Image (tube, rainbow, N blue to C red; front, side):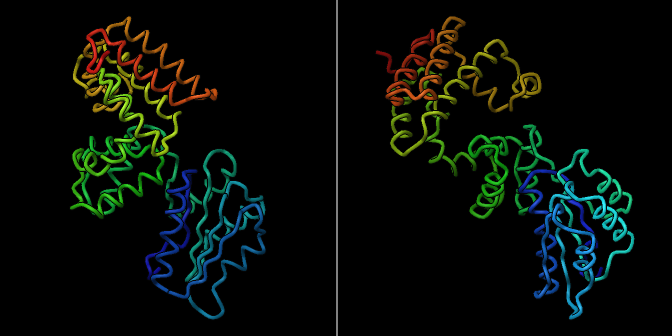
Length: 324
């Protein structure tokens, strides 16, 4: 097609951000080629073969048409037959976009469209840490920037694993910087956010910094950070140190063995100084108790967290700064 639009695009996967992006790319390109493009969207379960024939027919008034059929896995047999028949001879000035969650349901549709050699975009959920890091790097590259692997890991640690939030963070970082994203860039940009996270409280407690941990805790609670993620971060900090305390090797070599990013291993190795097995057992007990307290509706969750921070910090065998 002269516009460069594919006659048919099949989007396979259930990652909402990626699915919507693949659909939006076609819609945007169609409107760029023809501002008056006719855009129609249907649910596969509610679309009949007859209605399909009407919606993929070129407009009597000319102009471009885009038909989006969502959740192709729910298409009935007659619609699947009609779609595969249409794929053999798609109409000019019409682009058909079909989304399909993947899997065995409605596989006849995806198999048939693959055989017809339609344009295919994969939009599967990203579940593995390495895939998430690659997503961040690719996202920043797509926006015209550059991002190292450790910077991508730092961004995920600061923002979280939700793809929409990560995509938004990538866009903001590239827009507000020269596009070369490093760990220092991420740290500077998210310093304010990090100062009020549960992980800052946990990091201070794990190195025995009682005043720092209590100050971070009180500030976090004052601005409305929920006690549950703070308790979770404390438990995660204890578990992470327990996992790396007997592994003093190179963080990059240990990453695959421990299933953690190198920066997290390196940080935990530093925090492990001053801890012994007995102290870690005590810290695990404290972390379990405070998790139960804040999730079980303790009468004073802030007080429960303060007691836990003090107990974890003081469980270190090497003594703690600010220790009473």
